[in-house]
Amino acid sequence: MRKTTLAALIVLAAAAVFAFGGGEYGTLDWLELRRQERSEAETIARLEVEVDSLARYVKRVKTDRRLQERIAREDFGMIRKGEFLYRIQPDSLDGQ
Image 1: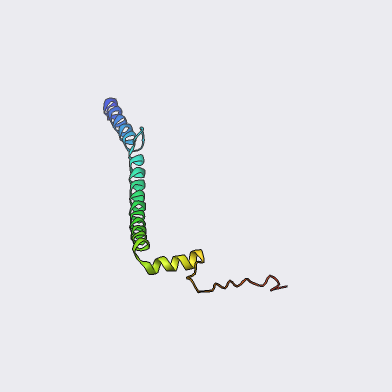
Image 2 (image 1 turned 90 degrees about the horizontal axis):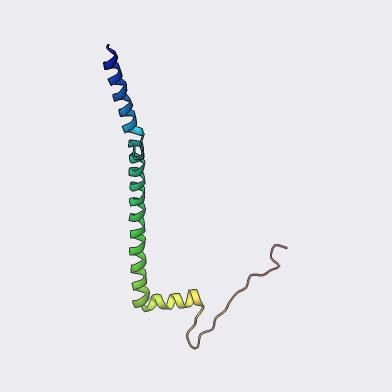
């Protein structure tokens, strides 16, 4: 092989290595960005499902009287007129 052919092959090989992995936006960076993009797309899809579920729940809370009453009773301890609320406290002496 002549020196010029060998030099051209070396330059081409160096250019190929630089194009694959070097530079600011090399192929390896591009592959990593593609992986991150897929991961973020999956996260977005999961969050969209969660947002839709929460939106349906909010609509039910606003319109479903039974759900409103259950929340009022369970979360806020509210009672109707004429009812009695009993709260049972755990015995602090248990286990001693």
